[in-house]
Every structure is written in structure tokens, then in C-alpha cells.
Length: 400
Image (tube, rainbow, N blue to C red; front, side):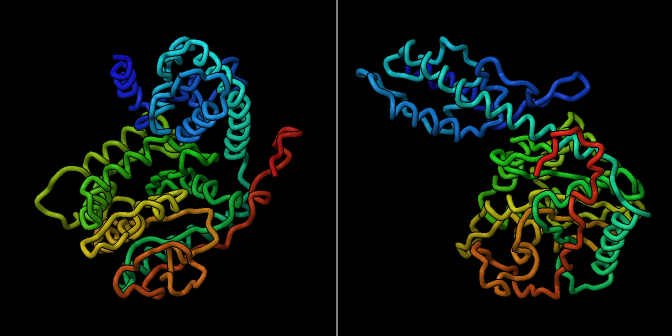
């Protein structure tokens, strides 16, 4: 009976892992607390679920004086879902037989272990967010104009040269070099383009802009629902069709802060991609619509998830997205995907892997695609130190 109740409570709380509840900045709410937590509150913690689950199991393994008490057998990721929202006196249900004493000890242990960590993460996040609001140092528009000219070059080359495989290029450079900040500046200044920004940073990596956990999980779930690589390509095509068919998009600020309009748009796009249609070919979006630039930040996440094709090969979501883009109609709306990543190997996204002997990912290239069939990567960026006015940063708040 106790085990049944435990499982029932787990089922009720697990959806929190899959879909985060968003709160907009309008009401002063935030996913993060700006002060040290006075008590352990797992709902507000940004610590990944599997890390907390492993910590709970590690703590119990080292615990002395257990008596005959055991811990219920649960996967690490479900432990956090179970604990979410429970009062301190309910932690006893994690044990068999239930133990209020062990429940209190576990609660106190998590409070001591993670309260400071959450506070440190908050501070880093706040500093990163403040950096995005500093005045952008862009003498005579040189930095933004140079990148915008490159985007135009890639759009024209893709439309004019039928040998170019897909409308995308890579912006690949070390962390802190101002990649995301550059996109924000362009999105705010150049409204003659439609800018759509998605950050795919994984839950266990801190950074800014923020990433809702459900964005990645929902995207992966939707694309993988068909179970095969071929089906995923079809779903990606429908997703691209939806993005191209729209005339209005969430603003950069809404996307950056993961506000409700951004979440609704993203979920609507996935719903459109999931619908069954008789035709699998991409639609011809009107050429009269403004050029669409879709930015996928932290794109290496797409390299880490694979699906099996009809030949039994593992194909990454990046390769499947690229195949979907290769079917895009060049005659309609102008479009360009920009893949941003903090990654030293451009060959993971751009040239075939055979050109980089040090490549450790097991990737499968698309047919006879060669480096000359892909748009060139962009890497000529100044550092963030040049792009930000350090005098606008409060004393003592500089981060290496």
C-alpha cells in the first residue's frame, strides 16, 4: 500500500521535470531566487534532477545506523520529481518502512548541500544577464554590419548555387566571445529581418540566456516520436514549414527571458510539426515575407541525441535537421539557420568528419556532401571584453 502511494505521488510530480512552469518578469517572478535560500526548496533549485538523485543515493549509502530501513528503488531522475513540493515531514515516504528521522536528516542534508550552490548560480546568472544589458560597443556599426553582410552573402549564395546543401552556417567560438550578444544586437537593430532565437543549453550547464528544461525535452520528444531517423526528418520539415509560414514572432526580449509568448510559440510550432499530413514536401513560404533568421544557440545538444535509420545507423538530430533543411524550397521566403556553439571543432557542424582526424563523434554524413557544398562558418569575432563597457559594471562584479 505504501509503495503504491509512493508511485502515485511520483506520477503526480514527475510532469514538473518534463514541463517547467514559466513565470514572466512582468509580475516580478523568476525561475531563480536572488537570495540564499533560507530552507531547502527543491522547486526553486536549478540543480539537475539526476545530480540530486545521485546525491540522495550517495548519502543513504554512506549513512550509518540505518537499522533495517531501505530506500525505495527509484531512478535518480524520478527522485527529484518525487521530492518536488513535499513538506519536510513527507520525506519519510522515500524509505521502507517510512522513517521520519531519516526523512528529516535527508531534508537537512539537501538544505546544507544545495542552498549555497543555488545562490552561487543565481549570482552568476544575474551577472551574465546584466552583461547582456550593457551598452554594446560597436564603432560605426563595424561589428554588426560585418556579420550582417556575411548573413546576406550566405543567403544569396544558397539561393544562387544549387550545389549548396542546406541554408545554414555555423558561428563557432569559445565561451564568452559575445556570440549570443551579437545576435541580440542585430535582432534589436535590424527589424527588416525576422529573428527567431532558441537556446538549447542543457539543464546541467549554467549560462545566459536561460533555457527552460522543457524546451529541449519537448523538442527531442516530438522529433523522436516516430522512432526512426526518416520519420524525424519529416517532422523537422514540418517544423521548418511552420516557422517559415509565420508573419510575426516573439520578440528577442521574450525569447531571452523565456516569457509566455515565447513558450506558446514554441509549443505551437511543435504541435504543427506533430500533425499528420498527406504531403511531406516543404511549403513554399511567400517571398514577400521578411527574411527569416533562425538561431539555435548551444547547438551541440543536437549532436548528442541520435536515432536509428533504416540501415541501422545512428544519426544525430543535427544531421536529421540538416537533411530537412536540404529539402527547403529556394524560390520562396529567404531563410537562414545559424548554429551557435562553444565548440573547438567546426567540423562537427560544417565540413565532413573525414577532414578532422581528431573528431570523436560517431557521425554519418549525408550522402556525398563535401565541404564545398556547405556554407562557410563564421569565426571572426572580437572578445566580450571589447564589446562591453567595463566601467558600467559595478566594482567587484567582474567575472573572469
